[in-house]
Length: 164
Image 1 (cartoon, helix red, strand yellow):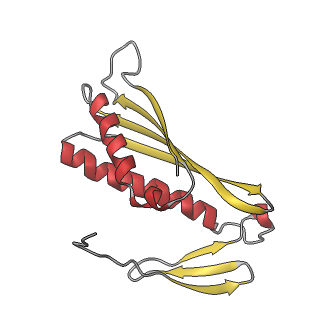
Image 2: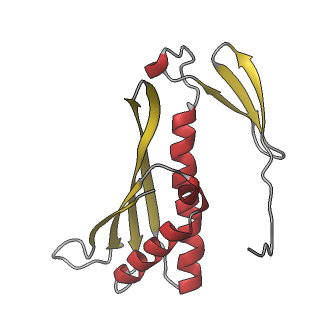
Image 3: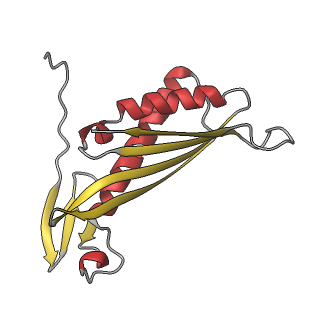
């Protein structure tokens, strides 16, 4: 394998309080993360590692979709992405079993199928989902923005699962 470019993304983490950490990256605002209440965490209002994983999946998909759509010349009018990181106890330990992603994407009339293609390409190119061992299930609801026909939505849903 030939490496044309290599990038590093340094993050520093330091214990803040019992069950809570401060996360820093150069030039970025500090984040606090803690054990979630589901695992007896007591730090209300702080991000959990499980939420940060979902945010990583969603943000990677979103920025990859932006790049792919721009390259394809496909207008994106609105993109709303929601994730749910699913954790289950399996064989005596907690594991992330899958991440569910719902992407609601609006484009201009006549571009809905191109948005679906851009979403499929973004899913294949997303670095974060590619690094995970668990399945990432992405559901795309693509439609035209407010100028759609009087009969209702010009779009529809597509659901895919990337298994590992």
